Length: 226
Image 1: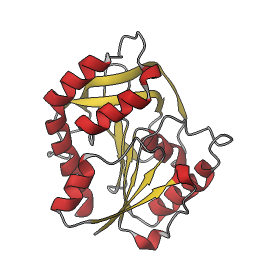
Image 2 (image 1 turned 180 degrees about the horizontal axis):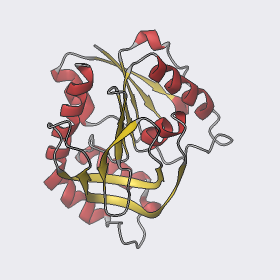
Image 3 (image 1 turned 135 degrees about the horizontal axis):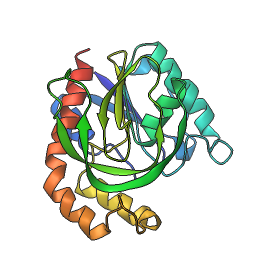
Image 4 (image 1 turned 180 degrees about the vertical axis):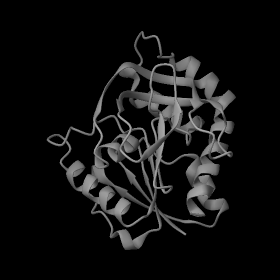
């Protein structure tokens, strides 16, 4: 299996997905969009991961590569590639599938619980405490199935055509990736009902990341077998 991922900033990498790839003998390649790298042909990979980033999906004037990236994701969907979108990546997928992406009522930063919305996919936990770092959300695309919701965000995750999974949260998060986000996006950590301090984030990362990473492994295994 060949896995390709799209990276929007140097400090948001694939975390535990890299561990999964090593264990499954999966070949990994990357397009660093912020460096102006060219996108590959969709024929060059079997699965695609679209990572997060501090920009928004509508910041095309500031980040002109977003235009080609959206076209690329759309082509990958049409070619029935297995796709995972994380945070910004999930929002890009929602946009490509025709849904509105907009500012949520609350930003979520830190480890908060999400609740499963359907009975299918028994490998997914009914409730999980997962790592969030987002202010935007999206409407559920036509034909998609909601996987998770939370107290403050109705659409936390969805699956489309059994091959495309969008996650507002970061199941790939580990101690290193959480610290990278805290170090590079410290200005986002302000007083808020669903915003934890850096100290809280580090403590909860040690407590919850292993279970979250296991869920990420389960999702990657599911997609690699479909």
